[in-house]
Image (cartoon, rainbow, N blue to C red; front, side, top):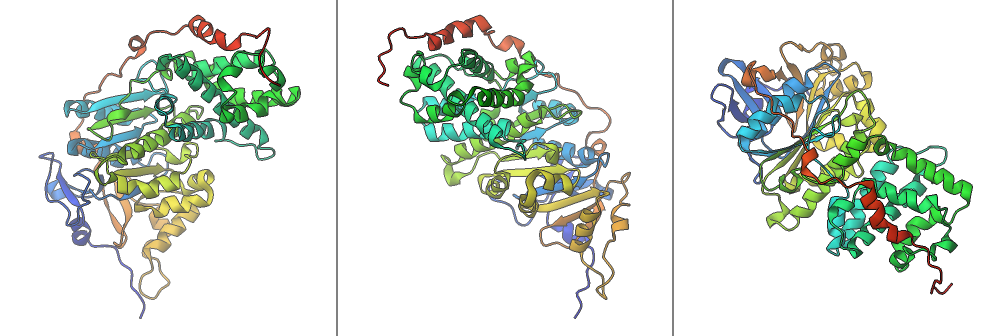
Length: 500
């Protein structure tokens, strides 16, 4: 007997989800099956215009949102999701390329008692501060070296290995080893000298790189310098640095050239270095109380995108670490990642494993992509793992033929087995003005419905929260201060007592 595919009925589809009324701004009937650790918030899945009811997925499902540029992904999904989560009191980490989500939602979130934090990579002095070395340094100082090494390796992978030379990856991996060695040298020195955390930053990492290699120190000469006393019993530091220090001059110059090229984004932006020198963002609270962190990045260039990928990875790992000490290994406040332009970001290390494990920790991902092709470019065969871990697919529009074929096939065929339920041509003609979408959710049949524009949630009027201004929140660390402190690392011993 031929299976006859048809679209899911409104009644059945609506019954799966919780309800939110746009007039009263309150949640109504909850879905029959509630995720035990979650809340009322979630992504809008449909709406009933006659009584202004939005149907919200409050489960632990991850969501993949697919739509080409200009398809209203932000207005129909990203902004409304942030608003619904804010009313429900759930935490958010949001990549916000144009700052539109912040402008539309931050003021209301603040009125609702949220901690608001902005990592502003477009204007680094207009926002909060984030030092990516801070968390691993805390682990290092507390003696949790394994965890510190994991975080350092993640940073190195993101900065040094996000773009690897196909012809000869030796230079990229050598630069990565150098990065790890310099970070651990910085950590060990600052811990030994009991220096405050403000000296553990990217700026001083670059200073160490200059000071070590401006003297052209070979491995044999290394033992004549004072910083040998700090590293001589640390095999990890030595093995990480030796590949650059002990190699031939021409090879060393090439490794340093690759390292400098990958760190150039920091070298040419003093304000970015300042922003990355200290922590005053709200990452520590995001899994414990209602918090919203916006990652504001330039959408017209990709040079800072690797920092967004790094923040996503580091924040996730930090949340997983926090969860392991809590009841049921679950965060008390659900954390929702809303990642606009996800497929444009550099590859996030271990992301398929992240999205697989997130649900059991009370973490959800909402991934917004322009095309499947971009996702495959970033993640290769692992793109399939990412897709299959998203219980919800929300499709707006695309000109990508392979994607259109896939979605059409997933919807099934009508009776007779040869006519698709929805054709490629029909998929390209969903009504943008009315907010028409096609949704594949769980075991439901394909559902074709509508979503309300952000204007339906709050009308034309909304307040814009001023961006925080951070320059007064940290004492300046001048180059002279750092040079003076690190000078004791570079004292040449006249009568070394080392056994060669």
